Image (cartoon, rainbow, N blue to C red):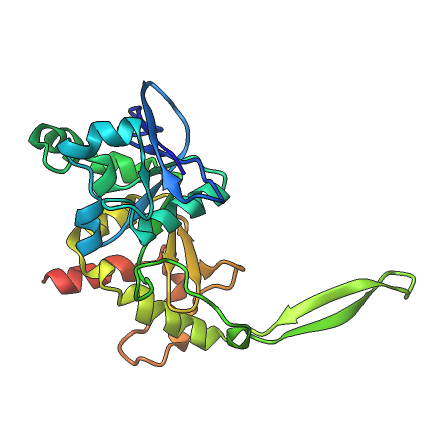
Length: 264
């Protein structure tokens, strides 16, 4: 991957990261500063950890990152979370990603003053928000999955209007109750959702991709969360008695309610 610092009032926010993924060498390079560039970008919502501080942009490494780049495996390089978020953006066909600890010069007070007042715009205009609501023990978004972990797939013959077999279609069982429980336990009850600033990020995001222990959930401003294959989260099927949700409410409200309870 490669990094490029950009600026735009609506599309690409200042210091967005441009990626160029190299399959043979996991690396990032800040290429150049480009003013007035407009394109869609992805933004990351996450909690800081020890590796975040090591990977943050500072006055000391800013110019180096803009010219020489940084390897994902080098000291002060990108974290596993940042790398996989960037790789996901790349595979979705989006070249740019915004990450606070990388795109704001952390020890520059002037940069912080400029950027802090723009945070609402950054999330509001992002094409997609990646919410790191669940990560692996080593801080990655995607866990390794064994074949035995997958739900069994059944293949059935497909016949045309003439009655002749012309192919196959596949069925895979989905546990609606388990889907709701997975969402509530690892997305709704995530440590990320307990953070006050995440309320703003969630409300302003046009689209939100949240990670759980067993999968991903996609949500937009006009509808509640659903799995990546389109199965809606049916809250009333969850086993927790105190976590009942009305699907007719329209927009999903669990995320902000969780934040309110934790704040008060």
